Amino acid sequence: MTERFDVVVLGAGQAGPSLAVRLAQAGRSTAIIERKLVGGTCVNNGCIPTKTLIASARAAHLARRGADYGVTIDAPVRVDMAKVKQRKDTVVQNSVTSLTRWLGGTSNLTVIRGHAQFESAKTVRVGDRLIEAEQFFINVGARALVPDMPGIADVPYLDNSTMMHVDFLPEHLIIVGGSYIGLEFAQMYRRFGSRVTVIEMGPRLIAREDDDVSAAIQAILEAEGIAFRLNAKCVALARRGSAVALQVSCDEEPHEIEGSHVLLAVGRVPNTADLGLDKAGVKTDARGYITVDDQLRTNVPGIWALGDVNGRGAFTHTSYNDYEIVAANLLDGESRRVSERIPTYALFIDPPLGRAGMTEKEVRASGRKALVATWPMTRVGRAKERGETLGFMRVLVDAETRRIIGASLLGIEGDEIVHSLLDAMYAGVPYTVIQRAMHIHPTVTELIPTLLGTLKPLA
Image: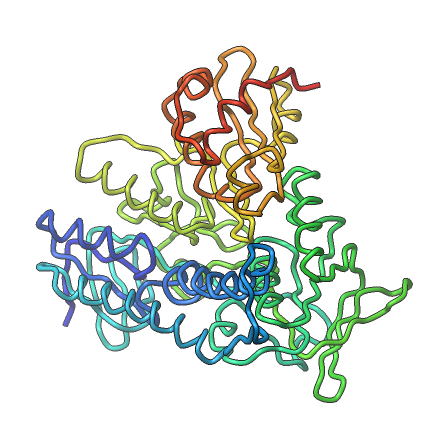
């Protein structure tokens, strides 16, 4: 017997639950299907748990720095990893419980547990249940990429998901991948007390950022005792007794680095291979991401794709914005588009990097006339008061429109301050609006007008 709904949402990640509830409240019979973790990556093994762990790591770091602030701690600072994990688990469980209760308590919404596969453009099967609907919204997310490197099948390794089960302190954690996920784990576990080495095959860290941003981040992390091996070649894994060895060079010494544990942080892959998309006629690109238009519609009428699975953003906030776009277009008579949003994200090391719009490298490549201003955090009063003066702030402005087109804020509270610039970018106002605004002293944001006052033509 076929079960019929107006709408089926596949996946209870960031976009799925909000969309399912909104559609159900609009009077549409709705089903949301989740095969494993309610809340998806963000709630279970992404944003929420990692930032909870980062908070514990920062507490340990500040405790060790107590003397810098005139605070004497007589006993050595000790990190109880079992309690750190317990705290993280509690935060995650509270989030999952709240989300599960919200979904279960919504009228007109049915929660179905199991793995869904399309059998046609109008039907999916979950076990022995055949479910039919006029509209489908795919929000199945992505998972950690396991690279095809020699020895990978012979060596135990961790990824961002399995790392959440660790309740001990790795003696020497080798992290493969010098980008956002890898660097957050690197600083976190170094502050917990592990020896940490980051292996990156490229010539520098986080290649999408400007060169000086990458260099500053590396210097910040090296100052905390994290080791880096860039330009790694002939990368391969091998067992060395109870340890793991990572080959990093064919020619140069050292040829390999030995550690107690390996964490893979080399990218993500969409969860599309086992959805039966071919039976529904839904197209994907060469990497497996579902192809969507500017309003997140697939090539098949009545089927949308939201979140990481569509390749149009790899963050929780882009996934939630996907929900907002689809809901506004379907229910509010609007015509919102993905292309209207401004790229923005953060790297949650300490100090954090807040990013919005274009990098300096991208502005130069565009050929447009621009203004640029850079300000060191050593000249920010709030940073000096807090004893956290690492990093710098940079803003880029279109020389003709005088609108802000990019910002890189590497410094204390940079992940929060960047929003003041982002909001001005969305408002489409000239930079002078925020430059002339009166800000509170002493804060970091109060230096944004000062920074804007030093704008000069980009050479």
